[in-house]
Image (cartoon, rainbow, N blue to C red; front, side, top):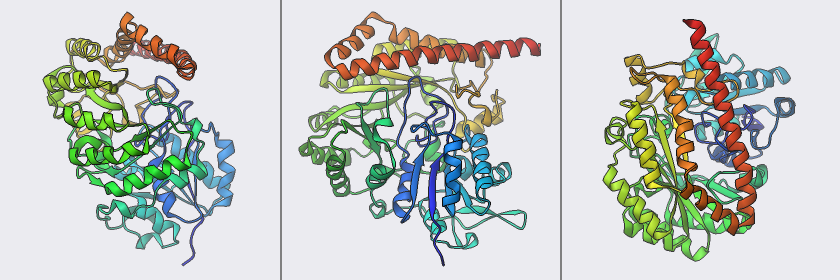
Length: 487
């Protein structure tokens, strides 16, 4: 069995499109932001002689990437629902450069829709179903596709699926992704609006016990069982990360909810404290104050918190599993302890009305996180929200139309009394009401005055933010013209 020289590729896409996020984030962000392609870096760390190319943050064009197909026997593309059509064209271009190259696609979209994906991407030879790390290893080792579990492939014009792979439970068996980061990625190209620059993100586990109806990864690839690496493994990796990347100012743990396992996160914090590193992580807004105190005392700077809505019924509808009174207490604890919060909100979930949107904006101003991200509900195939939308006739757009040709997010859902146009417009109102308050403007200005690097970055982000709002206005005007013509 002869091994295949393998390239792992996050394909070129819309300008500013975050190809590294776990689901290939569905749109351009408000400011230029890029997450690390950890989901591709993991199998790349397991395949000898492989290479990882993350095209979006490196501003690589298709003309620059395509000729590389001649140098490889196998190429693995990471794809998503909104980027799939673009990624299928990328595969076609790669195949035209090297007709003999074996092309696979991985990600939630192909895992949920393997047969339609293969039909929609003729140049793709196989797609993954489920966790794809060991599937990629087997393909790279040169095993015939029929002998590899966890994929769908073409055979004599038919699409055939192989047996499913069992869920991976031994997370310590995975090699560290740090060497791939150092070898293949350009660390300064990874920006994030709320993390110190430069930063690095990585995982200490997979899966999330929460049942949020909109959340893509736990319902498709990661599952609801939180499988973790040992505390010793995490501590050793972070000690090495500090040595390998002395320029990095912050490390982010991108587990869906690192704080789900309270004793473990407390122990991790105690092991990180002596390293003297600054770190952040995802959290639900229900972490006990005693745990927050331990985390803060051992280097925690910021929590990324999914507030989602300021209306309890909307939170219940999305099965968020949080209560407004608990959220208020948590936010108060964070403020008193000096823990920064980046709050995320979603508009357009089931039960949303113009009144609940106003409640959520008011709630965001009351909670007053350091920064926010406001998204429109995105019904990804494979999620409970998608099934709800299909059953109730809420879908305004096809799943492939979650973004426009510039990468700006569409309002994909439509409810009686709350149209997609109203939801789209409310995002701008949300941002303006939150950020253009005197209190918030003075707070951000204070941070800029105290740090020259922060000042340069915030000024750049300000320009990008206003450009983003202009792009959204252009999209809204185009939608209104199209609606008027259809009458």
